Image (cartoon, rainbow, N blue to C red):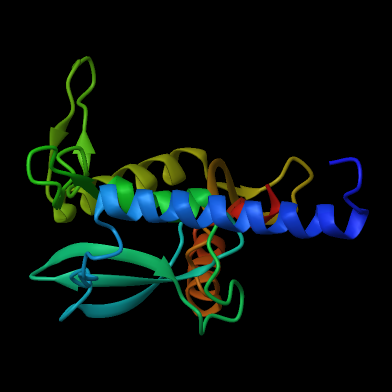
Length: 205
């Protein structure tokens, strides 16, 4: 061993390493049967699904997403690669909205509709301790009724100096990230027509 040169030592070491790696690999393949196992392609979850684009509702960035729906059920959600803002990327919170709508069945492992997902407006009457589902028609009428009552009660035609202001400072308006420019324009006109002065958007908060 004293007469082995540095070059011979490297050759022996390299051969020994390659032999050991090959032997271990062969043993693992023989015991697990992985090498002989044929590849089984997984069933595509979105096969036959209808795709619809949407906007993430969580923050003011407004990333685009693609919803894949089969038989009226959401089966997949991913970033929209054609969207000019996120180009297919999606943050962890944006991707987690899929779990808000869907959960996995522990018995079958299949996607099922989340039992906690809200599908209708909830209303809790004054003094009540429980929320109850109501129709959208009833909810919208209730909102409109209360908005008008509060506006009429707090409306100011003129300020303390006599200047015409036509405003109410009892109602605020907050826009959301899922609104596009056209929707924002219409809603802003409605808010100003009501005399609101506290008009804000999520992107500025």
